[in-house]
Image (cartoon, rainbow, N blue to C red; front, side, top):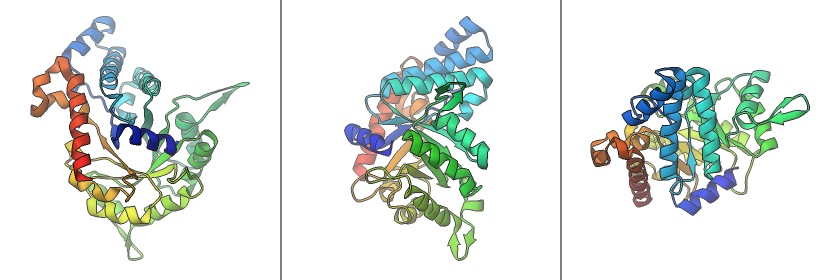
Length: 305
């Protein structure tokens, strides 16, 4: 799967993933009004609004980008109806030729971790048949239960040509409370990065591994160190745009071949119309604003590299 992602990055010349993290405050009133007219101010109405909002954005940007990253919590908050919208979003993005990174941050032990892996990346058996429940291409995984939580994902990835991105150094301000702790003279995130490199050796694509890492754009110096620790791991970089990351912060996440990293922006793109810079598009042009935000992001990264 990593080879497919790289091919799409090279084709679009955009190492960018758009985070499909819908919140009701991002959705234009005309979309909510239409959804509520059909289903009322209900969970089903909210899910309908989310789906229509996502569809508009995907239609507007799918030719510019290689991948999307729906964050499952934004859908789960609306219960079963929200998860139906999540599934529809994943299916639609795949139909549009996009690689889908399920931002699910799963990770448990034994059979529980295996069930998470099957749900998002594998196939579940029902009698004489098997089904791919959500069928994302990649999933984000929490490593802090150790190898027991990762190995089931590795097995499912090998069986289904899928991939994972392991949380190593996240972009949030308090990440250092645990991730920066010094263990045997080294920060914990470096030790986790070494494990990512080790796990990745058993799950290689052509040049890069199907086991990647999540490292925040807000910590460029740490990203530089982790790039050396994980030379064959693709790095998923959140924190660009709304969280403060800039193109100039991203250089060290890439390898000399110009590959090795994919940069995420969520609300900076999907809610671009609410920013002063893109206000001219208005709520009716929210999708066009998202497209322009992608173009601007692509240029910012290209100039930095």
